[in-house]
Amino acid sequence: MARLQRYRDVDGDVAMDGSSQANNTQRAEEIQDYADFDEEAIQQFDREVEQFMTTLDDFSLPEYVPIDKSTKRMVDTFRVQGHTELISGLKEELIKSTDAYLLNTVEYQPKDKNHTQSVLDKSIHALKSLADMESEIKVLTNATESIKTVVKNRFMEEEELSYETIGHYRNLENPPANLSQLFTDIFGEETAKLANGSSKVDKQLLKLQQHAFVVQHPQEPLPGNLSDNRDDDDDDIEVAGGTVELVCPISRKPFQKPVITTCGHTFSKASLVEVIRSNKQCPISGCERYLNIQNTKPDHLMELRVKSFTAIKDREEKERRQNIEVVA
Image 1: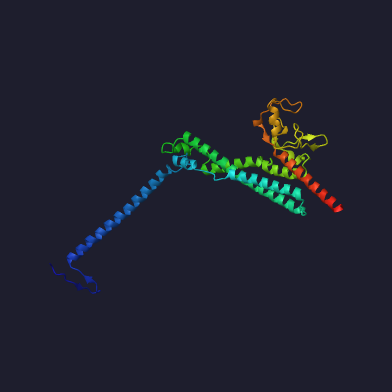
Image 2: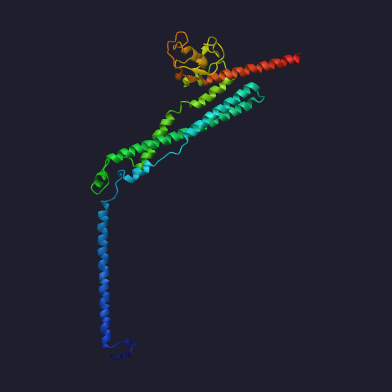
């Protein structure tokens, strides 16, 4: 191996022999080649990126995309977890409890009248809250079912999104609402339907208000604000003088398990059953409707009237006897 000889020049730089200088020159050229290659590669990469972005524009999603399988499956799983049966049951139990309380106040006449009204107000407020909750669940349920139907129809009718169809969907003049907007629109429509029907008093709320009135006034017809939109099973039987008759037209005794017929007449159930065994025509003079005991419904309001009337009479008789004992 040749011995490397070094010497220093006047400026003190290290000098190399001819072989080393040649090697360094070669390395410098190689480095320059790499530098030139990197610059060309970068320029080529930039051109490819620009071309890719131009191509990507052709694949940009349109404003509206059709429903795909995964979206349909997701929508099919939508469920509204609303316990409407439970809420309905709670409303009925609340009415029964309030009825029992009101009848108890009739019998025992509490000294604090404000307390009775306070209890009634709380019952009405609770019933309104349950009714509102029931309405909200109904809105969500109806909206969900409507969305499922729309999504199903779109999935069946629309072409799948692909390179061939993307232009069609991008050029739609009036694209349909996307899924989120669809839900918002349908939910708004169902809410509007509920608002438009809000003037109709909730049947069970009206029933509670009716019951509160007849407990205190068992023989008086319902006032106008409580008689609107009432169910047929709450119809009053009125006679001359504007009072409600509390005896069965057949037996002429106080109603027992009163039922109301399809023609709107109320009878004690046992009495009506006995009559229609031989003659199925309504016992009320002038009414030619034929009756079937299976088509009758319990007349709860009449039953409450009789209970309240009896409780008032029992209380009055008890007070009369107490007065006689005091005089004696």
